Length: 133
Image (tube, rainbow, N blue to C red; front, side, top):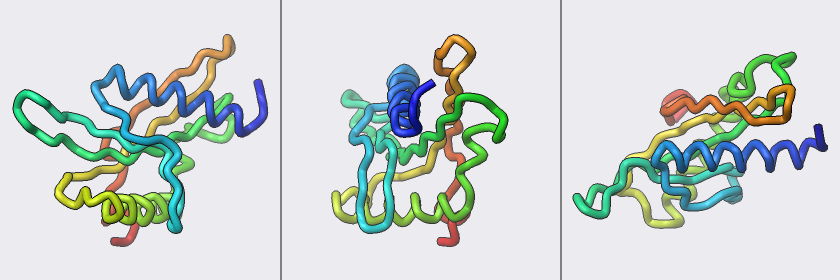
């Protein structure tokens, strides 16, 4: 298909499109801090009308061209989860978002034989406790 970086960008774009269709509001993409990188920061369930804040979702996107190495979402190992959790906690603190409920989602993206993305969204794929917190 293309190089690894381009594949990652295409996967993240497909994941962002899916998240928007599912009702998420994307806040930021590719957030880096001293603890790691977060692919997508989004809010799901917020309502202007009712005043509900919704849930802050930290989304890890994993992309593959085929399933020879297993499903993309299987690559979000415990050590990777721990990095995401640390980065998310630092993000929440830096942005003053401590009052938002938060969760960790994963989107696995595979490209079919025609080069079209097929996405699998796993809401609440892991918790801060899973990462050793």
